[in-house]
Figure 1 (tube, rainbow, N blue to C red):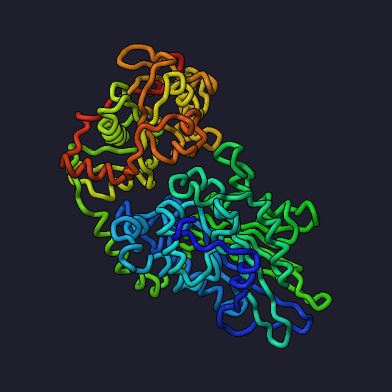
Figure 2 (cartoon, one colour; figure 1 turned 90 degrees about the horizontal axis):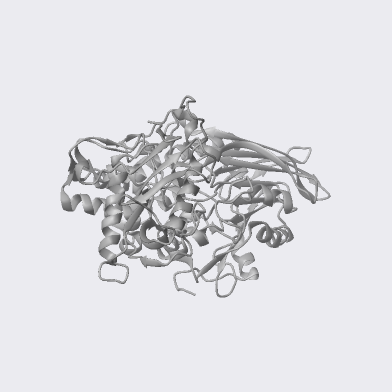
Length: 590
């Protein structure tokens, strides 16, 4: 087992490290009827948002619903709840995806890595100041590799949980499975709250390069069935699960891995859980109840959206029954962070690292001959996405030169990650590039046949709703069929094809050709593809088993920046090529 993976914990050791005292504060007090109220708060999917700032727009964050973001906002809400309920009556948790998502996280992982500088990671600094009681691992915690993750965990004052992340060699927990918090009650027996952390099995697919052979990610339900009785056996009066998994029971990958979005399944199938605080789906779920199939009891679920836009607040009522505290009531809500100012303490704490990141993203890398926008890229072939295709094609083409595959045509795959991305006419900065390519993906080259490429494009074309010839086109309902996100609509460069949206799914790719000739089923191509897609993200056919001909671990966003810097000019005349379009019975939609 790699030295940078925390020492695996035996069940006994986990129990020893997991028992802790509640954070300092006045002890909770029970009323004359032996009734007690406690409050649990939860954030999730913070994704590097420390302050209310949009690094891509170089402005305070805002969206159409006027949401705010960031831990500085969350801190204010937490302070208000602690003041209202009493600090000794409250706990604070997070359900994962913390150290990836903004240029702030990127900078301190890649530009000035905290693994090398010894500086405190901004998310550890902010969370420590706010006073989290525990944080659960999300899938994006693994994006920058295990050494960075280990450094962040070491810097966190709160335990970082992940019961179902185990050593690939020993099968033992690689991270702390749970904690037990003891809440003192004036004149009464203390209340013990157990918290089990569960993360996402998809890590094995999405971050295969970082975890393969080192970690395995077990089924959430089975893991909870193992640990909840242990936590109850240690005297927990209240048992919570913090899960980085949505609640719809579905997966974005095949059935070879345990279910991705299993939070409601855990609540339904594992007895002894009072509430599940979940994340990963980025939804605002103030309160949902599901019935446990074993006990018939109601289990509460709540999810606080994303990026610090919401804070889940769960109130429990406990009474003394046969000398034991028992949960007799529970309710939850999500608070909107746009209703409060930022906590100046957190803003001040983040200032140096925030200002450094702002300076970095505003560095000019090239001059664009004209404005290029991604607004129409989900349904039209746009020059700004062609820029990604050009850079990827050139990189992979150079990499296979001199190899047995040098004679094969090189194609490229890209998706519209952001509809708001723009290269302005004139100076183009790092943040413009980062706004176009918002994920920390790396580049690979794989070999596919013509038949596989046809299947791949048919799968991608599921993204469009079926629209009959002559029917009006409504851009609001044209795309994202079946909930397919923009980032799972792949466009292919290097070949030409039409997508007939009047046809059913699986029969939409028309006239697939290469250099004016129909693509033969057995013709071979090299395809530039990102690591998320190649490892199975999105469930696209043929790619996970395709031969890999290039994997230089080059980060695509950085490749875009370096390509622009080297040329100094972004001129669509040198790379823009309209090679695909939407049609109905051969008639172009646009």
